[in-house]
Amino acid sequence: MAATERTEASAASPTPSLEDLVVITGFSGAGKSTAMNVFEDAGYFCVDNLPPEMIRGLLDLFRHPGQKIRRAAVVCDVRGGEFFDSLVEVLDELPRSGLTHRLLFLDADDGTLMTRYQETRRRHPLAPEGSVMSGIAAERAALAPLRERADLVIDTTGLAAASLRRRIVNDMLPKATGRRLAVTFSSFGFKHGPVRDADLAFDVRFLPNPHYVDELRPLTGRDPRVVEYIARDGKLDEFYERLHALLDFLLPQYVAEGKAHLTVAIGCTGGRHRSVAIAEHLAERYRGREGLIVEVIHRDTHLSPNEAYRST
Image (cartoon, rainbow, N blue to C red):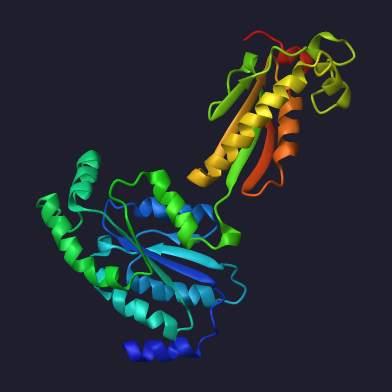
C-alpha cells in the first residue's frame, strides 16, 4: 500500500482513544531504557526497539473497539536497521491519522557514550565489526533530523539515572499520572530470617512482647489488646515519634528521586505481634498520601504461636 493510500485509510478509521503517545529515540547508551522505565512505572503501555513501520500496526490496536490503552511510549532507534530510516515519514503521518505524539530525544557527548560502551563491553549497532567511535559518528548523522524536530532533548552527559528520571517525570508526564512510589510495609519474625528485598529494616524487639502473655499469645498485632500491651510503657510512642519524622522526610525524597518501589521491613521475634502492629500502623498513616501507593504484608502471621517461636 502506498503512503498516500495508508494515510487515506487511516483518516477513514475511527479516531484513536489514545491520549498520549511518546516516541523515545536518541543515542545508544544515552538512557533510553531508563526513560522507558519511567513511562512504564507511570502506567504507560511500553514497547522497546519497535521498528517505525510497526507504529502503524499499533494504530490499528489503538483503534480496536474496547481497547483500554490511553497512554503509550515506544522506543525507536538505530537497532531497527534500515527500517529506522522511515521514522520521520511515520511521525509525519501520525497527526494526519488523528493521533498526536511527542518526541523525546536523548543525547550525550561522544566521550560519555564511549565510556558507557566500554563499561558494558557491547558492540555499537552501526559498527558491529568496527570501532565504537565510528558507530557513534554514523549514529549522530542518522539522528540529526530527529533531534531537530524533538519536543524535548535531554543531554545525559554527566547526568545520573535518578536525575534523568526526575527530569522526565517533571517535563514529560501528565501531572495526574506522575510517578508514584509503591511502599510495602512488611512485618516479619527474625526467627524465620530477614525480608530479603527490604530497603529499610527496623528491629522492634525492644518493645514488650505479648507472646509471653497467655491471653495475648494466640492473637496478632491487628488486635487492639495486643497494641495496648505493646504501648504500655510509652516506648512505642517514643519510637513512633522518631520513626514518623524519619519516614516523613525520606518518602518525599524517594518520590522526587523517581524510586518506584520501597519495602520497609519491621521485625520482631516471631513476626506475629509487635512487627504486625507497627506495620499496620504505618500503612494506615501513609495510605492516601500524595505520590504513594501503600500495601501491607505480614509474612509470618500464618504460623501458630508455637511455630513462630520454634528454633530453626
